[in-house]
Image (tube, rainbow, N blue to C red; front, side, top):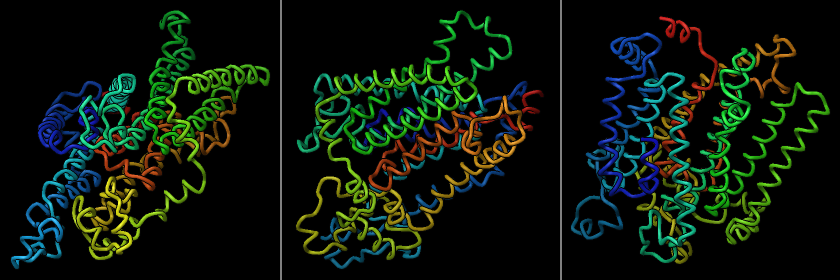
Length: 493
């Protein structure tokens, strides 16, 4: 689910989503019910019993089911679009849905598209959390990275061959002919997707470094081959990380350029402090020089190889531009979406309802200069989900994120507290509260945070690929955390 949907134009085309995702959904549910990953010497029967028992007690599962039920109600509680169904309404038929106090929509196919997004994301999320053990979660992230690696290479090839559209599909609209990268029809969605993959690849790199360090500390380094082999075992995932960083820049998405560069700086500082905090000053200077040399080489390569359009996008990045985009002051979308939500405060106006109702809230001046391309989105995902699904639907979406992060926050707090009583030779760097969380989990969390911040100034989460990756990567974070006592017991059985 999490890899295939990225190839389906990022989930932006209903025709390919509708003929593919339902079958993948049924297959995933079948695998989750019949073949969850076993722990230790568990039998398949014991694994199924454990998973189902855990799922029945997990509020995350019931919240996900509740959200899908909420999104399914509008299919039978359908109203009419004041603009699209004008001829029918003129005949005296009421545009209101049959039951006004329940969730509704005005276009079943549009709403079905949104329903498929969440069916994909939430089923993948639940399967990741309950169907996979810790090692399985890490394997899933590796699969996602190499799938994304293929997508990034595809994007570079398309750029080199002047492809007419994603997957070489011609775009009928000339204005949007260049607004794509790889399989994505919208550059900001592509930019965010590859920025998130950049964070995941760095997380896997840090995990590989930790594994090799643990083998060497345990005296098993010789069994891992030569120093050359150990080098590649540590740094293999830097290859996709570098590719994803340049893929994010090549999308020419200003948000992706800014986000990926900030993440690069954060990851560089975090890694440098982590790797050098126990070294002597001379060794720190030597390693710092090597690290800066590598970064300088990457920067030089970026300057000489990236497309000419990149400089134009970078020149438009300034504090005022970012602030205006994040607050929506330059356009009517934020005001209109807020008014729509106030009218449909509980359940919203249905999937893609914003594009059907927005014109009713616009002034004459706004209608004259109405945004045609991209005008179906508020360019603030949180506000658009709130307007289209109300406080109940959007509250469920936020609750899922909180429930995914709560266990991570609990373990983070425990690790930070334990670090205060750890031998100084084994203690993490300072500030302890930051470095107590394992580096791979920190990197994934930083990438997810970047996606959420981006969503306040654009619409990356309205891509099924990004939405699915967002929920799945959060569900996979426990795979990079220390084992719980009950997991140790289950593995020994």
